[in-house]
Image 1 (cartoon, rainbow, N blue to C red):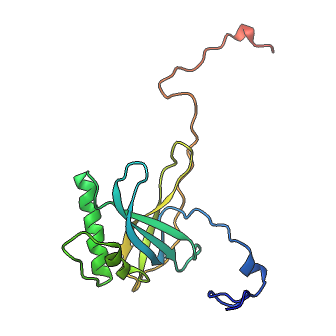
Image 2 (image 1 turned 90 degrees about the vertical axis):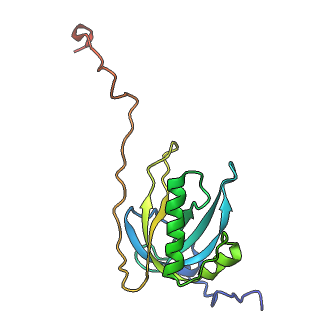
Image 3 (image 1 turned 180 degrees about the vertical axis):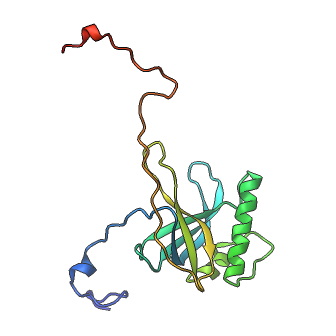
Length: 178
């Protein structure tokens, strides 16, 4: 392959092929068809807690081409979280007609899902301490008959330094300069 050949297609030199696209936060409640780009075992760097991660690539709608990540916490210590996660994993096996093994899935097992397309619902987290919010995937559906729709972003709530329990300031009207 020569320097000017690309495995992704023709090198055109056109602006739409050269400029990096700006990605937007996907509004809460958005539904889209998405393809599984990767599905693997993962862990949090700070705690070492294990979970499964799916990287979804949106296939239609206003946000086509953007990625969203889904974490499935099948190893969580909280029984409710683990139970829901195991049900999500089993739902994925059923939706994509993949037969699960009795043992925890390996990356090789999860590779059977790569390239599969499903309908997903995307949510937004509440802003964290740094004011950042993130997208996540709570729901997955069969692709047949799934309809794409753009959700509505979560409202931005202004934070004030005055707590709701504090009393309003008292002003002495004799000190007002007018």
